[in-house]
Image 1 (cartoon, rainbow, N blue to C red):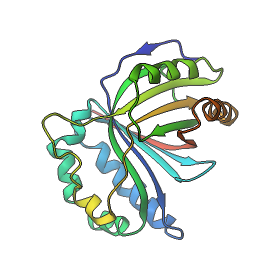
Image 2: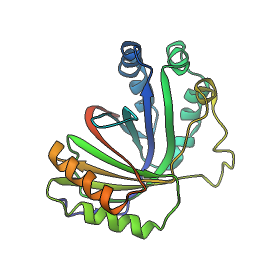
Image 3: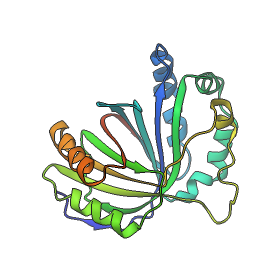
Length: 221
């Protein structure tokens, strides 16, 4: 539906996770009362956006968009990772679970609106970036598809130890990583289901999920 296509320099922190059953109140107290604000307050962070699954695990999908991927290796961000609050420590000990967390670069964006639902199609296997861009362009031709992003895992040249777990990750256990992801923004649930069905047929090996928008916080300069 969107008719604009851009090469983007934005950084993305892409996170899929579950919450321990019975700990949803603590999880939301932490996320909404502290964590989201702390992250988005970091220089270079543009927004944080949360979603909840409507079809399968992982239950939650969250992403942060930054001015560049390098921001996600900045001193200010790494300081937060290595100096978690008491509440963050509590949540990292078995509440925030089954975590997939990857620093990415948004290499392609088609369209400029966000919808009520997103479809995430992710893989742990590298592939040709031009093929990913073609998939995004094709998806955005679907009626009701507002935007399609292509995210590719980013490792900075200046930090060969970017996979070394920071303190937060040491507490919760090692995260899994993706190599790339396509995120399609849908106008409504029926469009999301249609896009998901298309991806199931054309890309059966991908990890797919439909997520409903929960909330967004933007960095106010």
